[in-house]
Image 1 (cartoon, rainbow, N blue to C red):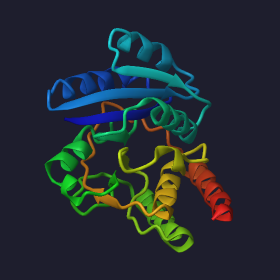
Image 2: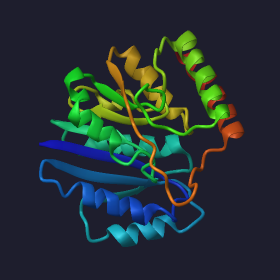
Image 3: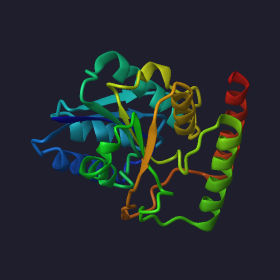
Image 4: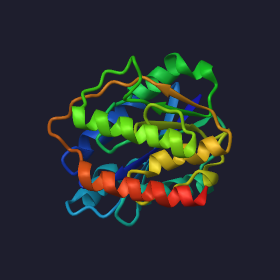
Length: 238
């Protein structure tokens, strides 16, 4: 049986969290796959925490954790929890957004075809040639520059390090790839640490699923500045 452990940072997503929980419950009714869902609330100013606690209280598959504000802070807490408490055999750790931007196209593509690559980590890549993604020119441009810097500074030859992640916990020692970054650079840092440890990474296609409203909490300019600062700090370590 395939076992999926979801790590989902939760920040100001009150408007979509009920839909996300409903989708997870429906998807994992399938007896061929099992799931556990770890939400890490990190400094929301809306009622995200109250809502997620209310709608998941009767389902033991849902675990709610808290961290300081920041996507990377949430990932750190979630990954430490997984490393200490989750059985690793036949387990894929999935990192995704609280609005499930690609729903289950990442794990479906992995199960249907890409598992044969036998990689250690899979990334649901927005830049994969088979992905169906709507992105503005500015986001595509910033992403391209960012990936060039990752290649030049760290030797990471990937088209997208900001997508969803499927990490084979039986092959990857989670404690060794936990990011220091508090922000969105954290996923790129996971890739950098994984590459340095010799892990194989395969990018897989995904499809963007429209949500009723734009729930993105990404601030392109300020988050880009934070990412560059984190990149410089990490380079000093390597």
